[in-house]
Length: 251
Image (cartoon, rainbow, N blue to C red; front, side):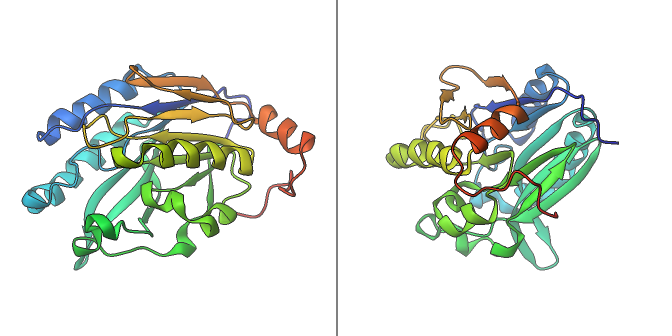
């Protein structure tokens, strides 16, 4: 049952994905456990396995174990990340939302990074599945890494309270990641929680941006936490009216 009196905390994670999947899972579970009750936690894209194409069968087999552990860990928290899974005959990079012991939402990554060869391993999801969902009274939208670059997707999620961005973003394009995440928070006047990997090839620029465009990056912190404030969103949308309705749209 949704409670309007809960005090949610936004949490962006920053840690390294190792070749050992179980080590990665235990790192994530430790960080989830140490977070505050009713936290909204965003972990890096494919943080449990990485894009380990050389051991793809093992990657797919690990999904079941990961789902079970994260369901258990989400009893009083919201956990957002992507997991590589096979559905039928196709393999997807699925962004998932765990809450109260269940997977309350999932969808396939809709924009695969072809420059990195993702289309050779994954089936692509649908743009239409990129939408605002409500979890524990919070309107949440999800963009997975490369999806951050598509302006049509920004419009589809403009009335979100929180936009979560699990990423594995290339270090050579670090300025793109920092600029786009900040701009998204400003134009949609909401909180953006971006989580990128600590691996050497990635930006390491996990962080949280508020509706004013004020940025906090994890820097050396595995976990960055700030309070969620619906009032801050409402005040910003009233102060500078760019046409984002203060009345919730049907979900």
